[in-house]
Amino acid sequence: MPQIPNSPDDILKSGDVHFQQGKYYQSGELYKAFLARHPGHDRSDYAQFMLGESYFADKDYALAAVEYRILVTNYGYSEYVDDGYLKEALCLHKQAPKSVLDQSKNRDALSKLERFVQIFPRSSLMPVAVEHINIIKRVLAEKELAAALFYIGRKRVDSALIYLDKIISEYRDNEFWVRALYHKAIIDIERGREDDAIRLLSQVLAYPDDLDVKAEATILMGQLRGN
Image 1 (tube, rainbow, N blue to C red):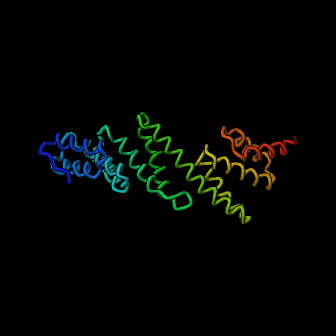
Image 2 (spheres, one colour):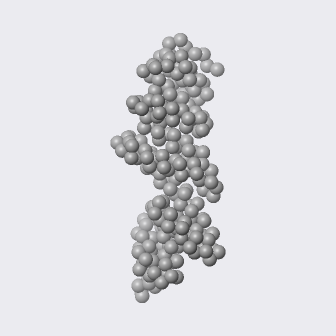
Image 3 (cartoon, rainbow, N blue to C red):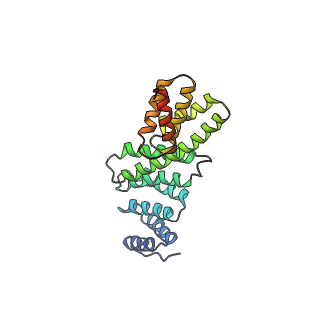
């Protein structure tokens, strides 16, 4: 346990020093002591934010999320609210398992990040939010595509389309989105919907990254157009 100074300023200074030294348990204890001893202090929002930061840096994401939620709920005036809101979402993302497992926390994180974009459009943290939105969408698209391919392999095309359509509409602009477009185009070709297939294959070919399905899409596009 760290020694707790008497004055509020000294408590915060000591907390900051411990945090900068990577002593996150000690810094957390100091910020908690500040909040307990000096409720209503004009720097309480900072202490609350840094308490969340201490847990986050120590990879205790569940506790960090609680402290960030307290910041957002109780200190709506604070300059740290957007940071706390974003970090609460990142805590959910950090707790999510791999893509083949349950992704409820990532879905919750995505929802919160998308709300962040709406609530704090001028925040300097917007690039971080957008980056993680794209990361999570890629993970979710990978999971949904695995389910779609499972059903395709078992000739249950209608079930596969549920997952493919979800990827196409909700998780755009990543590798698994492109693969979903490609597999839906194949289904459209098999069902005689050549115009729909051409539209989907055009999006596959327009994707900037080099993927194996783009070569296959080029062949299919040539066949559909009679080349």
